[in-house]
Length: 401
Image 1: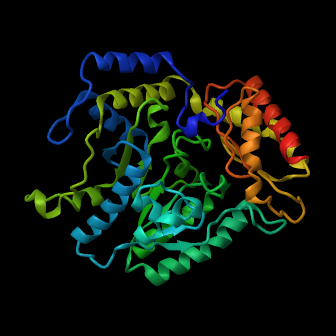
Image 2 (image 1 turned 60 degrees about the vertical axis):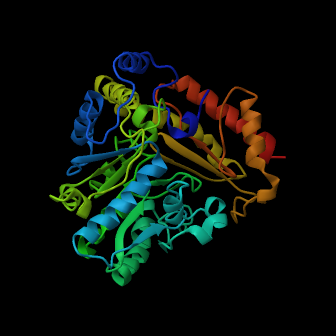
Image 3 (image 1 turned 90 degrees about the horizontal axis):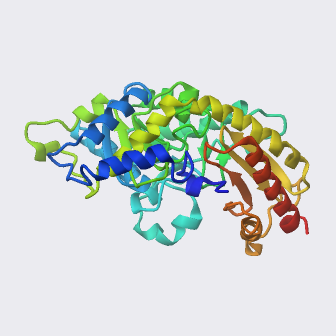
């Protein structure tokens, strides 16, 4: 049972017949063509569909082939568009503490997970990092909304101080996935959108992991009723079949690159397999499944089922918190429940837990001592019960010794 959707990419299970058929049909028509000066039906259709379903104002699509590449393109696009408009001083980015946006150099630079970043620091540009709105350390009695709202003061201060230098703020909406699945309230995104407008700074939403229904809405930004200036998508875009990513952006950013002489202002950023027709066909099949089956509503029922099954773990002596946004749930394991003292990383208990549950037929991959669940949307309620039961057995066996 693939309880983590193979690194969060798989939406509709393995070898889905509709997706298989769409790829096979495309394979007999066109496998690939350069996207510079050429067009093909799948990418035209996919672009139209994405514009229809994305938050309002995101009218243009720029394709790459993985999440990190999408983030790189978004960073360059933000900087370059400001430069084309005469704001050459804007060359920096604001990011959240504990954030993760990929492992290429630009993406690493605006991330903040030391495990991935530390060894490469001499190679990286310097980002402005503000305290995360992560609700795990909130004070007793404080709600997620209260805590997230209070934590926005750090972002407000950074924007006030640096906005003349800043191209964009980049965030993972609602869930900092690789950062131990830490979560926050949508009000933070609402405040951030207002502040970015006020200080004339782009907002980049990295929904690579949280897009396409993971948090209970098609896009996480919908829960704050906002639209970013640049939206990065990948992973679930093709339901885990083939590498594909896209940066969606607005008319003003697109128009900043439009010029009679393409070499004066053009966004010269390319990938050989940009807009691959096979990957686009998989993405179109994925979107068809969202259209023809009530995926979001079913996910809400499955999310409730997951929540109910996890409730019993809240009382476990080694569980500090059980948290959830839609189809993403996490269990934070600690040495002491009262003080929240963590286990020593050298013990590598999460790795032992992963092996324990794998031996019993469930694929989990804990982030340190955080056990998380991000199952495909085709999972059944009895399978959720089994998944959580096996994980609970593993927690007792590994952490309860």
